[in-house]
Amino acid sequence: RGAGLIAAVELVNDRAAKTPAVDLARRVTQLCQDNGLIVRNVAGCALAVCPPLIITRVQVDEIVDKLTASLNQAL
Image (spheres, rainbow, N blue to C red):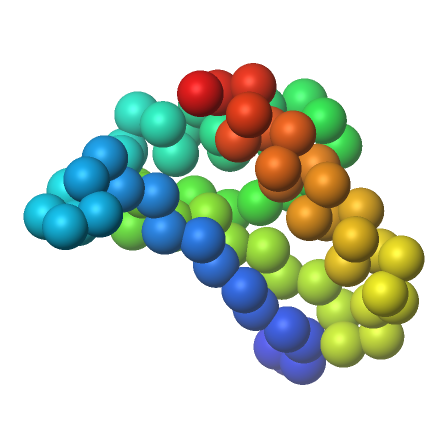
């Protein structure tokens, strides 16, 4: 029913021009899944994470670690 928390990271090729990094977002989405993190690719260039409201600090840290690792693998 939609209770929860949503956070997203927008990936761009150029911060000034805000050119969407669609290919990078696709790669990172797949790498996140490979690393055990489910993310949703939104609008082609944003990665959304939708954990439940009862998420713990340890779980938040795990999400950040897996997302960071996936981004580093893709770059």
